[in-house]
Length: 212
Ligand SMILES: Cc1cc2nc3c(=O)[nH]c(=O)nc-3n(C[C@H](O)[C@H](O)[C@H](O)COP(=O)(O)O)c2cc1C
Image (cartoon, rainbow, N blue to C red; front, side, top):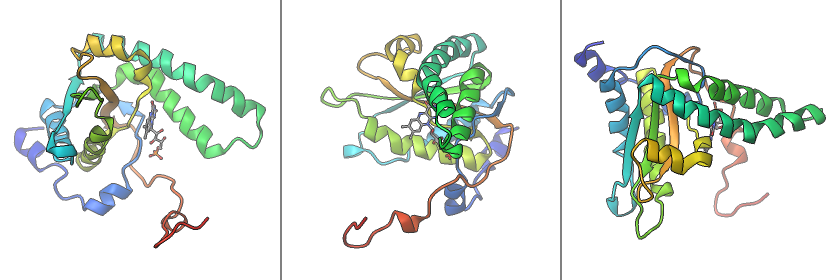
């Protein structure tokens, strides 16, 4: 893929259709992603709003296999500590919701194959008055996820690495002053995009006053 192709990639995806068909893509092919494409999706992140337009975000893209393996090992331990009790519950409870179980299985697949994801993109941010700017980073994260969708990359939003945050942050050059807030594993999707399962907006939208 040359520079010009990368420049054009994703530029013609209608915005709302892109939004509706962006979902967690956790089955990724191990093929490398051009650095220019990583730059392009991160650039979309930089167009996000932030308090006082401080733009506190820092993006760290880890691509070297040994470094990804180191990160994946810690992510896997952290994710299983979280999800294994849920699987035990699902086995005990016959009415455990099937969509949640499907989602958990996909998430476990990612946890067990994270080392194969060609890009581990960490989103971190400068603290402001001592506070982590998590809320300022999520709009940037969502822009990156949408940009991945537009250019045909698969991605998902994960936070399980936070159980080992200080160790992982130090490993990738971040400090107490610039904590990571999310890890987006990015790669070419093994499957296809599609609309995610969502409740109708009519169940969520209320005019003037909320009424249950
Ligand atoms: C704050 C936050 C943290 C999340 N952390 C994880 C995570 O650690 N691992 C993971 O696989 N998915 C994680 N997710 C992704 C959600 O589980 C995902 O959006 C959900 O499964 C819906 O998937 P869908 O968009 O394909 O329907 C997180 C999402 C949010 C908003």
